[in-house]
Amino acid sequence: MGVCLRYASDRNTAEDIFQEAFIKVFSRLDQVREPTRLPGWIKRVGVTTAINHIRRQKQSLLAIEDTETEKSIDFAAQDEALILGKLEQEQLLLLVQSLPEAQRLVFNLFAIEEYTHEEIAELLSIKAASSRVQLHRARQNLRRAIVKMLGKSYLDRYV
Image 1 (cartoon, one colour):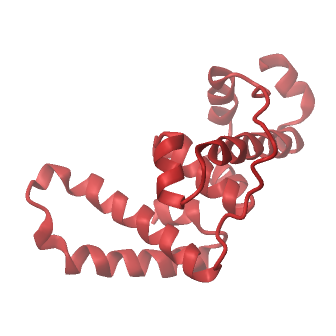
Image 2: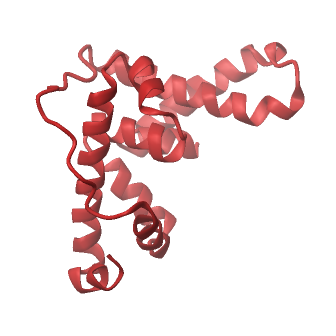
């Protein structure tokens, strides 16, 4: 359910995705040859189901302009981890859910599922540069939301 919540914009949608993924997992359980790979396979089914669900909801999933180039990230990955560690899991989930759909998908696939931009591009049928742009935008939006939540003075101490 955690995977579905990260990709959905609300809990009801996440529950729909979870139910669909749950059915897929149990109908294809016999395809898993090694029990040690079961957790990873279930997670992959959840991610794929979430992406497919979103695709069905919107015909043009990611109409992203490639004219914008990626700029330098506002804060380094280690600083990002420090700040995000200060947030409660529920707060972070709400922040991620509030991202625009394209940014939420790319952020989840890159930052949480650890896909490369090339893998994301293939999975979402976009260019790798578009994936990078969406990740940059997601980080900017998350930073703004964190500033609102924790206050600029907090971030200035750690960034």
